[in-house]
Image 1 (cartoon, one colour):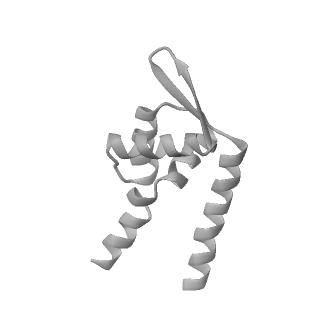
Image 2: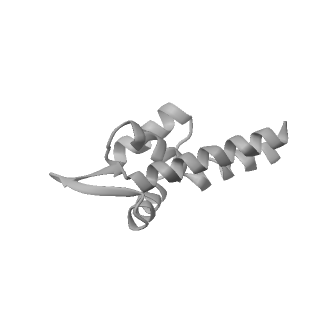
Length: 99
């Protein structure tokens, strides 16, 4: 049970590093991002939570969006790349401490 909690806390409940990592490879729209989360990282998230996190990342300047027909295409910004780098370092440092 404790493992399930830590998995949820570091995936679904902390979605931003995963979204930024996908966007680092290429711009995308929300539907593809949700599919990529499942394919690349092995977990599913609901539509609402992914949009909520994307909205927050956009509002804070880590992601931009532009219209492409009826779809919104999301892209990582330089600030988003820096945040991702810091997030990865955080996880790396925690793993080292726990070894």
